[in-house]
Image 1: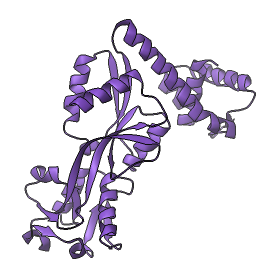
Image 2: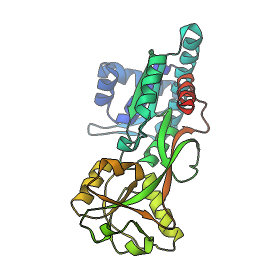
Image 3: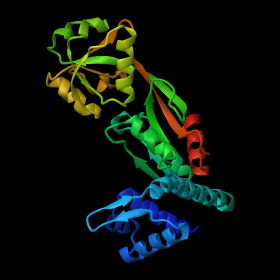
Image 4: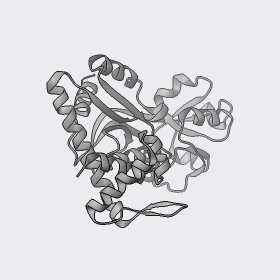
Length: 293
């Protein structure tokens, strides 16, 4: 099976548009269409339902998508392994990051890795609204090699390499009634208006787990946001209170930060990989370098 045809198929499957896939691959649309039709003849079944208005995967096409990703990843890894033997590590690293919540040492680690392996191209991919859960799906589907994730425990199908653990503190405006305090019990804020990360983010999971451990289940979430600096700004404008990583105290000296006396929420920052898929030479080298640092 021609891996180029598989690559063409996968681009159309991800874009659900021959026009967009052709632009992404920098090929002419007629050539792309011919390549996909050739693959369909080879497999003996249509992979797409095509109309003038839409392109949709057939059942056979849906089954082929994860297999195509695995095959193309294996071909890429084989090239990387040969290149490593031939004259130094080269290839690509598809790395998931976490917006402003990616650990501060990551840029330093990337710079050091880039200096040691200048022939490696690094693609940084931020998650969508689902945060860590988005990265988990991308890892299992083969679209990421590694990803920084926030977690409170194990993740099905993934192996986690924990880098650090961080406590969460409660942020409130300087004139909020809670601002005169230095710590709280979770029951003290059960009726407060919370600004939360969306479900699927490690910070949200950590907070929800702490409230559940304290036997409290009816916390009021009035706003959801997946960007930490925006959350701090919403707190600053008295739109609610929010649990944020303790390391962000220094970035918002005008706010007040309270510790939780019991059932303090915390989360882990880890690098995640697909448990069932061997790491590519580039990913394996990067993980070893980050772990050492």
